[in-house]
Structure formats: structure tokens, C-alpha cells
Amino acid sequence: MNELRNAAGYEKKPGSALHEPQAHPRLVIAGTGSGSGKTTVTLGLMRAFARRGLKVQGFKCGPDYIDPAYHTAVTGHPSRNLDSWMTSSDYLQEYFLQASADADLSVIEGVMGLYDGKEDTALTGSTAEIAILTASPVLLVVDVRSMGRSAAAIVLGFRQLEPQVQIAAVLVNRCGSEGHYRLVKAAIEAACGIPVIGWLPRDSGLDIPERHLGLLPAVERGELAPLFERAADMLEQGTDLERLLELAAAAPAVQGQPVSPEQEALLACMQMPDQQVRSLTYAAELCNPAAQIHKTQAGPAGPGPLIAVARDAAFNFYYADNLELLAREGAKLVYFSPLSGEGIPPEADGIYLGGGFPEEFAAVIAANQLFLSGLRSAAAAGMPLYAECGGYMVLARSLTDRNSRVHEMAGIVPAHTVMQERRAALGYREVTALHDCLLLKQGERLRGHEFHYSVMSYLDGEARNYAYESKGRGGSQPEGYISGSIMAAYAHIHLASHLPAAARLVAACRAYRDSKQAVQQHVPGSRNQQVE
Image 1 (cartoon, rainbow, N blue to C red):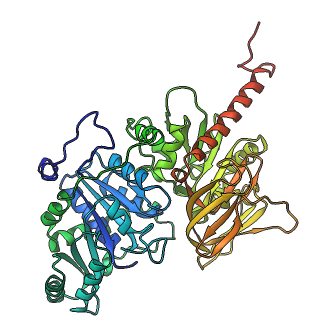
Image 2 (cartoon, rainbow, N blue to C red):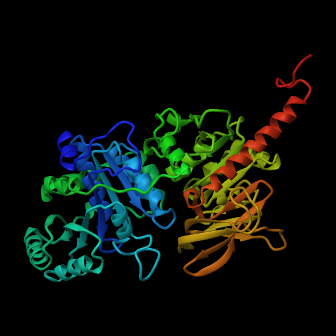
């Protein structure tokens, strides 16, 4: 590990400013398109390097929750998201620098194809843009099934499209044989001058299951561990890992932008010890309620409201920095598991229901009346209640699963959720508040994304206030639901896209706590009432 750090010219200096140039050994694993095999290669390389004793820090480009959980499982360290459309460039750079500061190697998994992003003719939101912002060398994964020298034309095109992107090496996937590998290797290196440093054969044992079927429980039960180990074994056999480490260590220093006071505070939260607030996405705890029940994370000094966060196999889609931003504003976060029979923690001043796979556990959720009645009571009492996607589904009156079974839910939102076989929504969203709400003032905006297979059916004649005007590739439409202290929508938002939103949510929870305490102080027999 020391040799790797010395080769990179990187040495941690206590007290150094976060915006100083720093060198971090790092690689971007990119593909020519979705399905090229970049996730398999990423996981195999992460596991192979972790087995060598390196501390590997995983990152995922774009709005994704499942791949980071894979990363965390194979490295033993919480993975994080980098998104150049939802967050600003300077935020992304500083976040990357801080999150990778203690790593021996950072591995950034791309999204879709290398140049695919938000725009048709620009790099916005693409893996390529993140590679440029982090000055990272790129390992390009190419699926070479049914081709020979044509593979060279593909790599040549990828190299020439954007000169700022450094494609440092190529790994060819799904080769028919070692002879096939030697053929495409010779063709690519002759035409492109880029080293082909490894290969994987066609092997159905390396196929990762479909993404929408509730995979995180399988990850946590260790059911995918053999796949990860197999990928690592095969990459060790067919890839020049030492050369790959050299390329990673040769990455230039990242010149971050000056840090704003807001970013300074967020990064300070990230530096807190684990018993306070650091990463809140440890995959080892996602489906192990016994390990994380009522684990309170302390925010900055001083009293702060307590936000109850549902966190288990059904509710696990949270960006680490969303939670850290809430902590920065003074919130204390306590986790509870509806799947283990828990209700809302009685000390809660607010509730955050993230997305996940509630449809996979609908019967268990419906049976937990302590949880559902607690949601109803909290809503009736005016407690701030914020829900995204899967959380939104649980607030509805019912959830119809893929087998057409109907499960009673909280009944707070006057609608019924129905799962369907076809995907209902996918892509980035910019949402504009139609009214003052828990996160935004009317007219303010946040950025996020949608990805779901369910549809929300509202009843005719029911009064409904939409939360957002949601804008995506297909145009704009009203979305979500607000009523009093309740806010729910399909959009998974990123709080770093509008930093005041975190402060607004925490302020609402603080106001609720203060009003609750004021009432308790005047209730006869209350322990908070002063006795004269």
C-alpha cells in the first residue's frame, strides 16, 4: 500500500486545506454501452485489489443505489455516488477528494456508455464528464462478441470523440477463446496505441441478476459473494493488475475549487468518527436490523431535532451526502426497520421514508400495524413526513404487487399503488415546487431522478395538491403530493442540488419538536411540567 501511495506522489498532510491539489490513485471503469460488462469488471477488480489488502473506495457515476451496495459488499467500505448534473462541479470534486482521502485506490464505475449523459450533444452528466472533473484515467470495457478487428474501430472512435478523456487501457469482455483475445488485442493496440491489459471469457456464471427484483437482500445474505469472487479470480488470471495499479497511481493531482462554507460544513460531517456521522450507507447493515436498530447519529453540537429514517431491505435508497447534509443542519438521525416489526421511534420529530423495494415485502409491511398506525398518528399530529418513491408507495391506501395481490398500506395519500411489468419512469428530473413545502419554497428547484415500475392511481374527486412540476426528457408534468406537513413524490432528489432544502426540512422538524415540547410543558402530570 505504501508503494502505491508513493508512486502516486500522495501523502496525507494533517490539517491541509481541502482545496489544495491532491493526487489519489484512481480509475474510471467505463463501457461502450449498457450491458458491456463494466459492473462485473468493476466488482471483480475491486474484490481482487481488496484481497491484496488495499483499501478500495468505490464510487458510482450517476443516480444509482444498487451498484454502490455491490461495491460496499466487495470492498468492505461504503461506496458513494458522483453526479455532475445533480450537483455542481466544485461540489463533486471536493466530495470526491474528501471521500477518497484515506483510500489506497479509488474505483469509479461509470453509467451507460462512456459518453452517455443528460444531453445529446454534450458531456453533461456522463461518465466522461466525471472522468474529466476527477482527472481520472479510464479503463474502457469492450464487449467483443462476434467481432475481430472491428473492435479496434470502436476503441478508436471512443478515443477520438473527446480528447480530454484519457482512455488509458482497454479490457475486452466476452471473448470466445484466448486466441480471440489475442486477435482483438493486436488489432486495438496497432490501430489505437492503447494497451489492452486483460480479458474475460463468455461465462454465464458472471452474469449479474436483473436489477429491479430486490437484489440488496441477496447481497446482504451473501448469495452473490461467489459471483464476486469468481469475477476476481478470472480477472487475476487474465488481467495485468500491476499495470492497472501503475496507471491508477499515475493519475495527476485533482485541482478542486475553493470550498464554500456549506461544503466545508458538509465535509466536516464526513470527517466525524463512525459513531457520529460519516457514511450512512454501510451495506452490511442494510438488511441486518439487529446491527442498526435505533442507532442514533449525532449531528453538530447543540440540540437538534430527531429524524427517524426507515432503513432496511425495503427502504434503502439514500444518498450518503443527503443524510450528511441533514446532519450538518443539526438533525440527529435514528434508524428503524419496519421489516423487523418496529414502529416509529417515539422520540421522533420527523420521518424520512426513502425508496427501495417495498413491493417485494408488501405483505410484511402490511402486517406491521405498529409502523402503519404510527405513520397515521404522526401525520395527524402534524409531524413532518417526507417520502420518496418506495416511501410514497407505502403512504398510499394500498399496494398491488406483481402477482395482483392487494396489500393495505398507511392510507395517508388518497391513492392506490399498482405494480406493472413495464417500467413506468426512468431518467433525470428537475422539480419545481408548486407550493411552499417541507423542502422548498414555491418556485424553488431541486434535481433528482425517477426509476420505478409502479403507478399511482388517485381517486376521482379527492382534493390533491401536487408537490412539484417535474421536468424530464419527455416534458413537464405535475407530480407528487403535499398536504400540511406531508410531502411525497416519486422523484429521488439530491439535496446538494439546492443546499437550503436540507436546512428547510430540519427547521420544520425543529419547529415541530419545539411545539410538541411546549404542549408537554402545559399538560398536567407531564414530566416536563415544572412543579411549584
